Length: 210
Image (cartoon, rainbow, N blue to C red):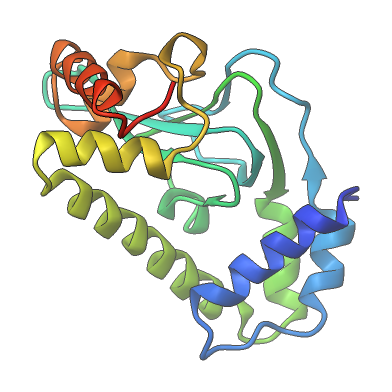
């Protein structure tokens, strides 16, 4: 059972905002409050789901950051997605219960809530139409995340770095960031050296404060 009504209100508002034209079942709110799990606080980074396995849970980021890693054709690890506070980590492989090609990692100082596949199946059985709605909503949410990153990567490098740090509040100053520079650089598709030079330039210009 959950324990923070303010955070839960943010979760419900987020779920409602994904597709406002489709109302959520009235009983869903009470079910989630009763059956979502407060995961242990991550005092250091922790793997939530492993590549090569079927994901057991979906997650809501109450505080901190969650990273999703994949592997390219050279089998080098890359950062596919970064989830910040008040976002939902429910990849397509969780929704369809297929083997994941991604690893999901909660960063240091992160708190997540989770819901298991078994609980999702109960929702589908007890709330008619919810399975179709959930799959559609998850796809729309994921597409929105991909579109946001594509828009970010289409920017010039300085603008890209500026918008990244203004979107992902809490990653400055860099020495205290729970996400290493090499991961930020990978996500932004720049080298670590370029990231650091541009970030310092933006700081000197007063556009980033740390």
